[in-house]
Amino acid sequence: MNVFTHFLKQENNNIKLFDIDSIRLNKIAEKLDVIATKNVSEAIAKADFVILCTPIQNTIKEIQIVSAEMKKNAVLCEITSLKSKIIPELKQAMSKDGIQPLSIHPMFGPDVETIDKQNIILIPILNVEKEIKLIKLLFPKANLIITEVEDHDSLMASILSLPYFMNLVFAKTLPHNQIKLLKQMAGPTFSVQLALSQSIVGESPQLIRSLINENIFAKEAMLQFIDESKYLFRLLKNNPKKFEKNCTKLYEIMSQDPDFFSARERRGDFIKH
Image (cartoon, rainbow, N blue to C red):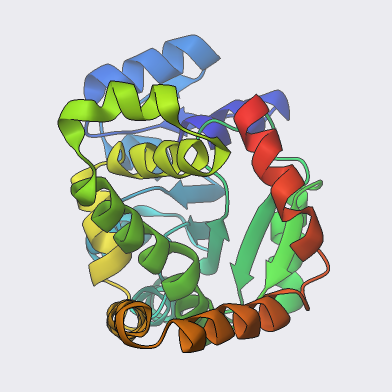
């Protein structure tokens, strides 16, 4: 909510906020000089554009509540990380209440200083041309990526669910009583991995669970990760040469990416920042 409010305020939009956490709500409203409202109805009754920022597991219920309060032909935009269960509910709200639905997935966190050139994924619902115009109206300098709902959630299993799961496993296997010494001795590979793992562990448990558990494609990705881990472990023990061939094959596959050969340099850049 914070990053959207900050950017939209800069663009001279009139903004009203509501959050069940009144302390957080009032802090953001005071900091950004926008209106904090006492309830959902007050926030959205006259709004032309509503952005719904809620946990994935609550979004369907909130769409039902919010769409019933919105004025006709207003835009309801949801920003969840997973879409398979959400899109049908948005379509129903559109047909029932005359709401213009919009489904996006911002691929950036709350720490970005600007939305310019940041990736925003658009899931088409009704009229893709109209929906593109709406996004460009609000976020004119964002990098817009358009994908269908099933492709989106399938790819998010690799982009979000699997990395979160992998880093939870990594964090659990560390000797936690020696973190200070580990950091003193570490090279760039461990330092980057530790920072990534700690940033993920620092997210809310509800978000972590939903990113993994709510994605219908995540289970298959995690099971494949577990199977590949066991397979490579067996090769190390029983067939080292075949293990090396697997590394060579992965090199051949991954090196087809044009950015492959700058990976070490980019890893160094992460350490500098």
